[in-house]
Image 1: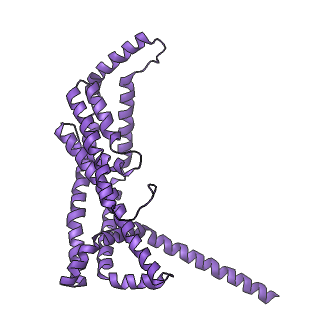
Image 2: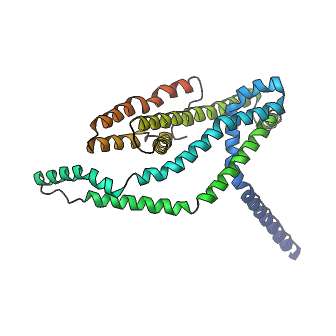
Image 3: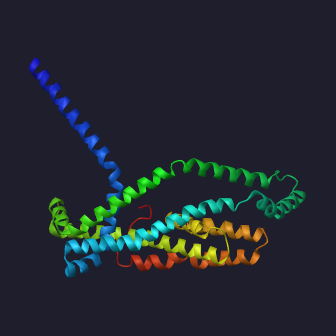
Length: 304
């Protein structure tokens, strides 16, 4: 009886150690899961033209060339965009100078006073104080984030290095990886090949339809802001691209308030042009490109 109790304790201790080691192993690999996932997505996305390079130059050279092309076409413009975004984020905030805002708010305050005359029950509202408070909150948030900016940059470049390194090996060893996956999937040949094909199409569709369309919408919005002479076009273009990724939101979250603000502050023509082009071109890129990109490919729920 005592021996059985000892054996049970030893078994529990053994499984406890195994679980602890599994948790520690996961903790070690956790920082790499994001970069490895993006490397897999990029590998699926670039594999069609990598396959053509592999037939000409061999798998190793083709993997190096494909990784180099991805770096030049995606990473380098992305880093330049990130640099401009960080630089213009300060300009976007500094443009909201309190003295300038006070002058531009005079027209709105006069209109609000007229509304209060006709509607006596309208609540009192100090627009200048509201804007001043918003600027102060934004400045405090940016100051708080500035402290961790250096650490974020270091982590970003580390993850970028891991992504590109993993991309090279995924492309070089695609044949071995796919053979291992086919052996691991517990399905018949027809169903297994269909699952692999649908997974590839799903990743391609999500990358192409979401990231590419959001990039084009952000680019179009930024160019529109630059043409109309609005401050920090790169910053607001990136913001519009981010909102374009979110379902039921879109770029109008940026260009619509900007057009209303231009009209309210006396720049009627620029405000109308921004609203019209934002609605007809920037906002409708999604409606034209998404059906073309997803034509014949996997359908997926909007939440996914």
